[in-house]
Amino acid sequence: MKTTPGVLQAGLIDKVLAPLKSAGLVFEVFSGVQPEPPARIIDECAAQVRKGGFDLILGIGGGSSLDTAKAAGILAANPGSILEYAGMDMVPKRGLPSVLIPTTAGTGSETTRVLVMTDEAVNTKKVVFSDHLLPDLAILDPMLTLSVPPKVTADTGMDALVHAIETYVSVNTTPYAEILALQSIRMIAAHLPMAYAKGSNVAARYNMLLAANLSGLAFASGGLGAVHGLAYVLGTEYHMSHGRSNAIMLPHVMDFNKVGNLQKFADIAEAMGQPVEGLSVSEAADLAVEAVFDLMRAVNASPWLSDYGVAKEDLPKLVQGGMAQARLFLPNPRDLTEEDVRSIYRNAFQDL
Image (tube, rainbow, N blue to C red):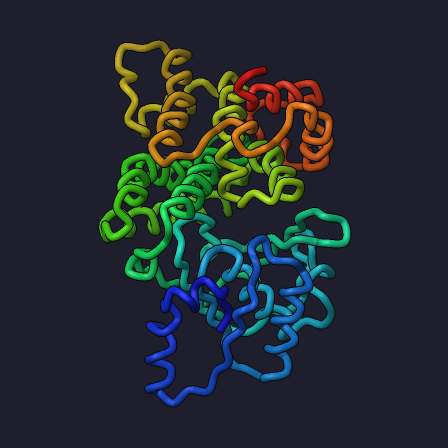
């Protein structure tokens, strides 16, 4: 079983271990998972799995725990370090059967063929894409999310929203992805403030878990975009959570992107409850950006870089880091130049 110290301390793991114990099953727990999991931690977990000769991997926790479990599962059947499998379809063989149980409503990792890790040697994130990462079973239990703190609720919920919005407007999207993404957007706009305001609201937690799951299914089909590209540097250089860094960049990238598909941004505004009736498509598209600003205010997530200690003098470093992820610009509904990237980051400083 793969999880984090926080999940252990919250007592969530006991709800899963109890039936395993009563069934007389032999298991071990790896609780050394770290946020934005370093490759070395994944390799440590995989070493425990290889030594134990287990029959199944159970991942419980947030996206980092689930990604670590997915990685350890494939390394049980494939040699070497997880870094050797970064890239598209580089994993030769299916690993151990896996069961994934998310305790946060954000990444949708329980539905995707993707895992993200940190390569500490070069201080960057690397991604493994493989159908062998898909779990055999995913369990969505809102009762395991009731103790998630408000800030984590906000960050993970905004992460799910980014997945849904980026997928919906992606040039690589599919009809299937569009349906899932738009429904996820509706659900997050309606239920994230409720889950943030009252963590014990089971209905809100249920709907957020489902929305994150739908957005994970959506981006697995339709792909992501420039929000993720420009957010990466905030995680690697300023150690922000993945969800918060994505949230910060979301409205600023949307404002830049909206001209690339006005109708879809108008659809997003309507899905988020904005009064679009009687407006032009351009006016309705503008409201999509306002809707995201409103949602971020509701969950106390500032969209301004200066509120996180990022200095205006860091603009060149931000641009360099963003351009290093230019592969993520390809599905974006609007092409980006280096000057465009600079302008987006500048707009993310409230006083520039």
